[in-house]
Amino acid sequence: MTSHVDTAHAWWSRLRHQGLLLSPVVMLERYPSTPEPAPLATTAKLRDAHTRFVLTAQARKGDTEIEQSAILAWVDALLDPYLGYRWGRVARQNAIPEKLTTVVRIGSRSETIRPHRVVHADANVTVPALLVMADTSGQVGRGRGRNAYARFLELLRGTGHRLGLLTNGSQFRLIYAGLDFEAWCEWEAGRWFDDGEGSGELAGLRQLLSPDSLKPVREGVSGLLDAVEESRNRQARLSDFLQENVREAIEFLLEDVSKEGRINPDLFSALVRCGDSDPLTDAQANEALYQATVRVVMRLVVSLFAESRPELRFNGPVYDLAYGVRTLYELLEEAVRYEGGVHSLFQRNTAWPRLMALFRLIHDGSLHPDLVFPRYGGVLFRPGATDSPDPVSRALHILERRVQVGDFTIHAVLRKLLRAKLPVIRGRTKTYVEGPVDYSDLRTQVIGLIYEGLLDYRLKRTDDSLGPMVFLNIGRQPVLPLRRLEDMLANDRN
Image (cartoon, rainbow, N blue to C red):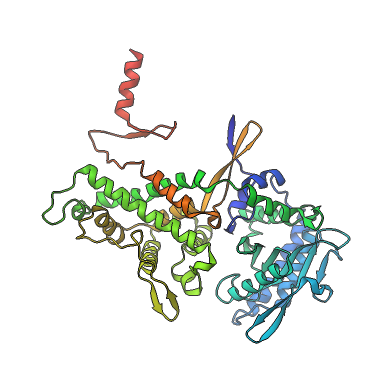
């Protein structure tokens, strides 16, 4: 069986994601080819419409809201002519029927929520495929945008039409609203006309939201909605690939620990010696350091698990801004995109202190009126202590207080936990497609299985006597000294 890495869907992996909207398996089957860009004249018209929107937004830069009419004019230019929805396929506000609105109660009063546009899947205008709403806040789903996002979810669930597009003109968020979860992906319109990766993302949006993609595949169900719902049934089990990604994330952290140890020879003194007890052997110290690093990465896994479940309340404006793991990754991704790639993270060390603050928040809780957070306690999030008789606790204290983990490493760690190359088998070919990890589908038993699997590994330190170490790309990738492999090769020749 041959294998290769899929590149037709690289644009999809560059978008912001939450949850599982389209699985790699379904993406390959439904959209097997690279998205075709629109004709140059069509793209030029869309660029002009975007320029008009940007100028309007800049004219109101001091205001708290973007003009709704400007957003809708920009959306209309995207739907027709760029996506190809001719007049009649898109219902505007006055032509939207009552069945596509929903009533919610806010205190003692009722409020009707209605979409601003409805895109139909068929020419007869009988199958609503996409509800569209304009959000006048500066950031979709953040700050003031959280209210608009929550209202839009109410609309999707209340009408039973689970697929929608929420936009403030700058971000376009495609959302699927299940009964007790939601999944989405988000485009940045400012990237669409840069003639680089952004143009591929625009072509991808055209592929997903085209009339051909939305046309009904069965009664009342558009093709895109069918693909989204099939994705949840065919998602690969998280335990199949997340354990390997967690192991690699641990290795990234250990590399920074190793660098710090070479700079500071006394870094591990408090780990090796504690009070009057016998000093730890190298094997014992390495084991404690490995267990401490595993514990740190598993804290991130549990935090992402909790953030994917609204009922656990690992959310809110203050939490997202100052503590959230997923929002931290998004901030680092923005720096990579707009500040010169991953090199922009080399000299930054802001992410590690933020994560340490998150771990303390989860363990100790908070009574601050702006962030009321329950005290969870527990061994996993318990801070390390330099005078603890437990060597793992002492190793944790070194990691938390004395090691400088750079933003570059944290970005790599979080990318391993939030993105994965998933295998898709088509005939005799295995293709790997990068996609988001859906933590809303994770079960607590899987977390236990991941942790147990990590206990099979051991940390060893090489030195001049051992020389370079070689990872063999077979089985579980055993590690052997290069000198030993050279001896084996020489003996084989003899």
